Image (cartoon, rainbow, N blue to C red; front, side, top):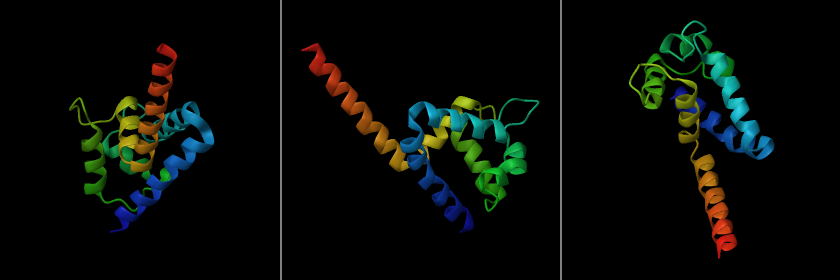
Length: 118
């Protein structure tokens, strides 16, 4: 139960960060988060590095199973770890509000491009 609360609490900050920092600033902060969590030798986030460094991002309430699930859910290439791209995609996917905002932004850009085209 604590993990769900921690995860929900964490998710709520991504849209706020996006609004405050803008797109480039949010990506920079996600990259900083990746760098805090990654294994220094392997240059990816492993279960062990996530567990060791999770308190830095307020994730200390997550169980081992929660942390393994996080790595597994974001691991698109099946190597058992998260590279920087996989981590950033996972963070967006874990924030429904941020994903919805991204969809609206994309729709606005596409509409503007179509108006400029015609």
